Length: 262
Ligand code: PEP
Image (cartoon, protein in one colour):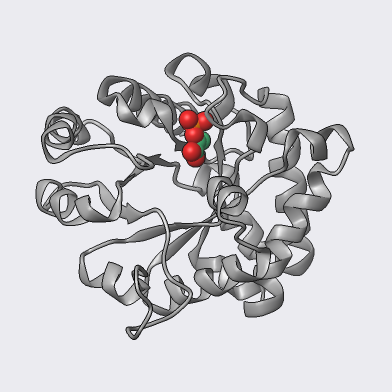
């Protein structure tokens, strides 16, 4: 399978932002444009309280709803504050982000915990979007690939390589998230290609079909050159996903890669 066969995916991570009113306004604009976005997958990941709202407002559209995290425990029990993957499935989610660097950093989520969450998400029939990426200090110490592969291997060690079949990977250098500092297309492509190469050593077919998104200050004015890289299969978008027009412009950039490949 060539890279053309991987359907681009653009996921918006709204983080802890939004309100019923502002979400409705944003969704009105996005929903009206979805029909024109052929050939790509679009996923919107709001905070938990708004998952039902997005489910309703996007019903019958081509966009999927995703959550930003899931509990390591399932399906229910005495785990105050936790939300289980089966509950997310019940709400109509299709995807769940796991291992975002803000959770790894601010909440000290370990590689092992992220792998447990990944497992629960897949067990509930949902698609995990596994975030991996190095800090600036790790990049400067030339540890980028080692960190990315360590984070990925925690999942493979727990679940086997086959678990990557129904998953999405997001390479998000921590130094590029919310900073306005983007990895260059060459820097991102290098990590994506090396990561895919690592997966290929375990299973070439899974490596060929695995979608690897880039995340880190993707904007309308840098999306085209990032998405043009052969191993970048779309983006995980933070700040720009809060602006409907910017998000749609990024989706359009992903769509252009389909047109130019096909
Ligand atoms: C993110 O939070 O996953 C992200 C990539 O954020 P931003 O686009 O704002 O850098």
